[in-house]
Image (cartoon, rainbow, N blue to C red; front, top):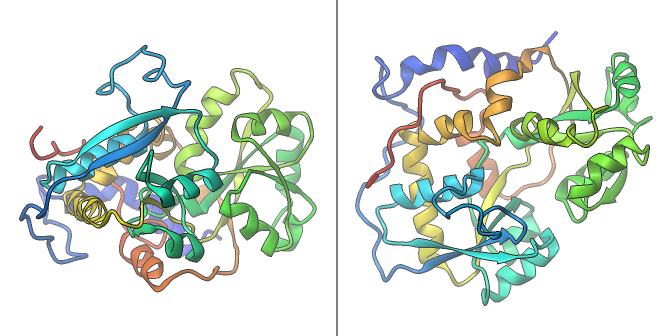
Length: 330
């Protein structure tokens, strides 16, 4: 029997369009409208790290053509904020999460990043309390090998999963969550994890619902034996936020206000369905097939609990097949 949350999660993929503005129905009623006044103060510049090996940093595309989801979402948020804040891409050897925290604390080179939240990170940095993937990061499907995928058909409980090992990136908060639940974790650098999986270093590579299909499509180009297991998934609330440097209050407020306005307009959800990173999963993977194994809820801040209740899709919110609205000023 599938979980009620997942039933709603999938069913609304097809029917929720009628409740969006401009789609023949009524506007959302989850929150009071965010005031449309421009933010006050001299606009800062959002200095965002970009992988030096990316097409943009290699001079193969313009910044306007660069379309990673978090970049498109940040552009959307700033457009909806009605501020004059611009984004300055900073090309660098993309830092680990640990290094990004230190760089953000100093604020010298970069002042905005995105990654998973923890109470400690929210104390160290200034979190924008809006889950940028609308809560679907905590729905963890498994990339694995065919023989391991077959073994997963017998898995029903968390105890059953403890016979497997799990691959995680260096410093990822999810690794600590898995270990806290007595699951065995092997760490490695992100760009090597799928190869480590194929070479037997671990059994399962958990990936978020929003990312797994896109990653699978490029990872199997070098590791064609990889498969996505369609039967089992983990779930635990683990939102990903934009974080800004502790002194960047105006930048924080602009991003949060813009995201709230874009969410109310249906633009965030529509971007998830069309972006090249997130769209493949949102358009092709039916979550009602999944047997969910819930991990005990981890301790989060009051602000994160509130943000997940308001914006989290897996808890029973909305999906849409409508195209993204045009952002203000575009």
